[in-house]
Image 1 (cartoon, rainbow, N blue to C red):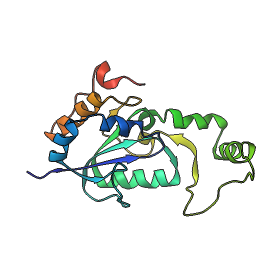
Image 2: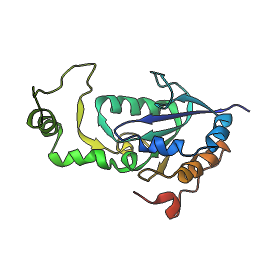
Image 3: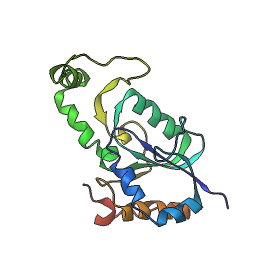
Length: 182
């Protein structure tokens, strides 16, 4: 039996969802027997998202041009895309910057008003990604197959979402234990 090609990505978020993923402890060994991890910010130095990914967990909201480009590429190359955690599902904490009214007020506040010794706006095309005007949830950019809320989702919720997929089944995304936000 061929292994499932598995990936995770991290957009605008705190990495808490990935830390919760690692909290699956011993089950990670079982998971490793059933998947080939083909892309992840955890323990990987891969630069390019591969083709023909079976399942991908996407953490974080879409906040900049790099996030936007990556999530579009991930959607094109992934069969089952899972919005992983509240930031991916709703944009959550990263979207708090939306209250400032756009990209320019955010940059001004962060780099000019709060700048210490030499206040200046970051601008290095190709190195510093341009902010989008708003941080947006992933499903407003690309279609999502499964929503897994939580801040972060518990290790049990993550396992209950992934395990059925390993057996060709859909996870039961119902009830408080699977759908609670926060």
